[in-house]
Length: 94
Image 1 (cartoon, rainbow, N blue to C red):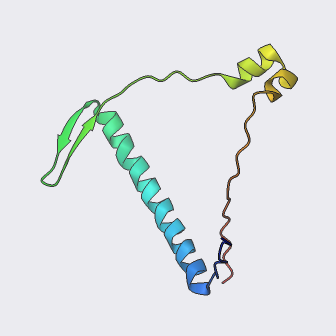
Image 2: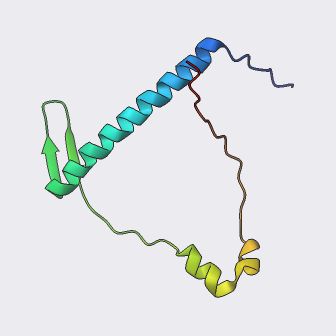
């Protein structure tokens, strides 16, 4: 079955730009709030509407630069996975 072609309207472009602006603002606010909780430390914080439990943990991550230095660039290429990404760049026209 053939995939139908989506018609992109001006309203869709405007809505996408608006949503992305809102996300940037919300992400910035979330970062500020999370920093406040980080400074306050682990614990459970409650309001009339919800409760938030803050915990801290450690995570181990592979140092890919060290692995690349150890194995060499050519050997590392054997283990590289490629995936497609869609990138969106917002350009203001007015």
